[in-house]
Length: 195
Length: 267
Image 1 (cartoon, chains in turn blue, orange):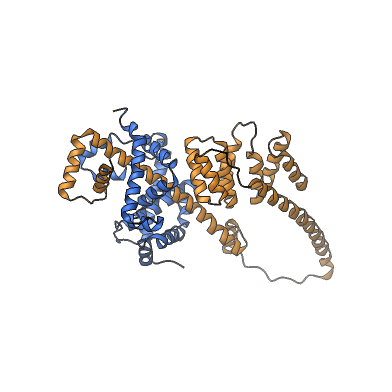
Image 2: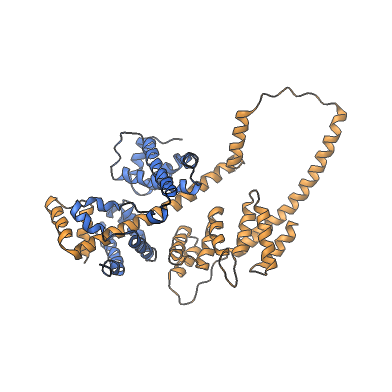
């Protein structure tokens, strides 16, 4: 049975288990696009699958953060994002710049800063550092990883506290910031040695 | 220190008022130390985003495989079969009415059917025996992993998760190990085992392939890969598995006795 856009948005913004359920439903409802992506853009199944997964993540984030403007249906919106991601992949492959440009999309948070501040901070952020921090994140304790990823997934501290059974949102937040602090301590050398 | 992170986070979560935002932006321009902290925060958030995307991708890959298997189980066909049937249905030419056959013309068909039935029974029996053996060998391969005494590293945590059947956690931890060392043979083997346990054959084969390519004094990759192929049993899998098993036996690699047992049943 197809889930309507209204139901989908309601489910995705309901939090916790409902959200998980609707994320899966959204993925399954349009997964036929993976084959279409392969066919239309001559991508491997794996590449098309990656583009589709990334597109689903974007759609979910935009719905949760209320940046989905409802001007089109979820399906149209998803197809647009998915097509763009497929085209990006095709471009990377055909221009043979994959090695140089892999994953070089500008970090979203940089765009929050005004030009001058952005120019200064931007010079200190690069893909290698992101990958090094990611590697550090993978080796952290399960608790830290879980709490950080839940936050990144758009859950509030209150929801995180409920899911991970902390006493309050404040405790969850303190724990989360402590985990970020650990990463900062381990990775700060990356930001001081070469500057 | 936490205050600083909390402050940076408040900016990006848009919790600061206009004056606070402007002050923050000015500090980025004038205070290099602070700008570095902001850069590190952005880098960390970006790394978290990548990790999360990977985690979701893996969850959805499994979900996709699961839904495909369910569809196949319901229809009794593979997705490819279904597509083929649909194509055939669409392209089907209206058939002529069936003519009655004379009794004499039945005889060769009856003989052929009997021969086919005999062959089918023979192969079903030997196939059943082979399947039993594969299941038993799989069970042996997927036995709980022994912990390394005294060790407390992420490999141990991963092994524990694997033994507790916490597959998602185990996969994440093994993946973390492989990100630090892509040739970690144990992590490759157990990634393969975890996916195999979930019947996610493609991913299992992916990791076992990587393991097989390593030059080790004792490599379980080829034998395990052969077992996965035999269990998956797609077109061509049996032949590939047979070659792998023959190689395992010829080179007396890990599992060669069991490989020989399987080859005997495949004759």
